[in-house]
Image (tube, one colour):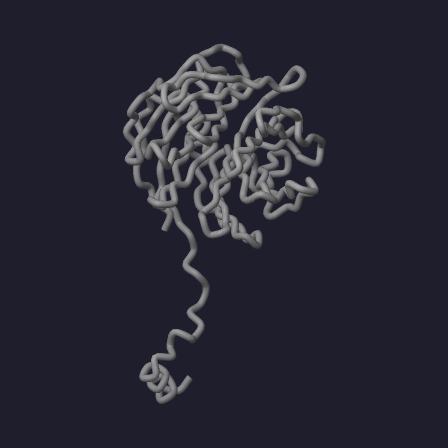
Length: 285
């Protein structure tokens, strides 16, 4: 481009139409971390109405029915407001919120907790022995989906009817779930380290990206893309067309990245460190 042409474009205000290169890559900048009074925090969930983070603490082994598990409330600046907001759970993991209720997995059952008082109101038991219920996602219409990571199953709770909605080896050990819209759900298949798109009508699956280790949490960035965590300590940004960017790798430090949450209004990615007994929050830039 000649100097004369460039000057002309500037004068005409046409520079906005020139190519500007590739978009700036996403990066994470540490914002805060909690103290270490949490006990094996496996997942974190933001309650938009209450402006608070709920944290599921396993507090023991991931599959023991020991009654030691509890849910904490943490502020958006990392202060633990109520360490044991509700307790008596069995290795609680994934959580979802709808209509004033908190849905949380409890090894072999789904527990429904009233957000107003922290009391369990209902439970739904998994089918058969050896269940290992893990993540929860709630669609906009209130339908609840739950993964059984060890048994290749996805349960559904709809209109108070609890059932095995999908099962089979094609699920490849499903962990993280994220209901995207009325027709689609994202699934993290831990056996193959992949983020996959599941058609809710046909139950067909398509791999979006793979090579991500022990896939755990899945959250949307609000722009059609996703953050995916690898339990061992990695976090990836996955674009809608499957481009993968590693944002974090704390495997050498042995800091886990479990079932995280993204608070869009704050551009804050909050990561449970599992054996690290704390949350670490990152600004997304």
